[in-house]
Length: 320
Ligand SMILES: [Cu+2]
Image 1: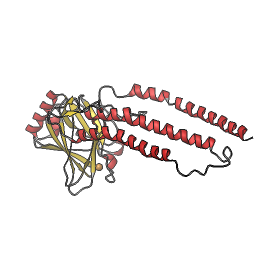
Image 2: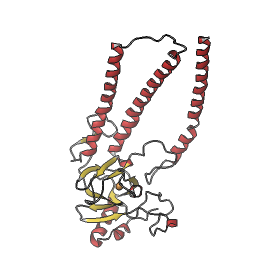
Image 3: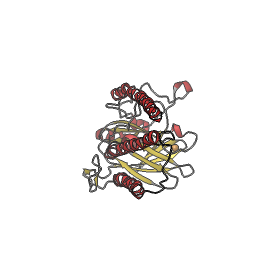
Image 4: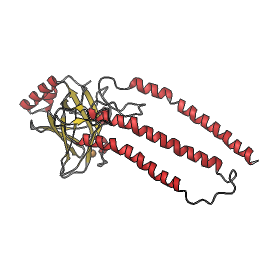
């Protein structure tokens, strides 16, 4: 009887496995569709149906993608498979019916060593590349230092030039202010609303809702941009984050944090405040417009001579 019931349980389990496999297969069209609609040239932003990290356009994000897809996902997958396997073994072989007289074992030295040592190895495998990526993110290039890029187990073989531009991003309640530090020019960047809500500055067709802003931070392509990040001294903590650049750093009142990026692509890249900062936390997006070096030179010349962001922005093609 016990054997028969054990078999029956296994049979039911097989049916369940079939259902899980069918559910997994039903995701395949979604995956294919997400790949078709992924951003190709222009803006980098989250799109419906996407499930992975945003496309990388900087050496730091290359490292993060390699770390996440090459190590973390595999380790998570293996650990989930191992734990699930153990649970299945326990449920099938050691339930009260299949195993009516339980063992009185309380210690097993080998097992105890294994479940201590294996997690330590797992943590070391995660920690070594993780510290490398972290120190890359927080070390502003000087033209000499090598960066990891795709190969996170190297000792660094990617050259990155010293910063060609310094930008200070200040988190306010609830918008960002950007300053071109060496040029002494600053401007505010506010979210664009929707026409139906009576916003004067409304999103144009094609601009992403809740991400588009009136004044984008304009930076040149293939240039290392030093990003200094802080928050309004009388304000709260925010965080400056742009997924495609692989940057995320806190904006703390009274403290100047620093990170950097070097985008190899032009386009508009969107991010969001990533520290739960208050009632309009969801409405202070970040939009970085990466333009060619010539376009940036013209933009900055117009900004410096006029002191007016709108005049400088008019030198660039209209945002579509
Ligand atoms: Cu914020």
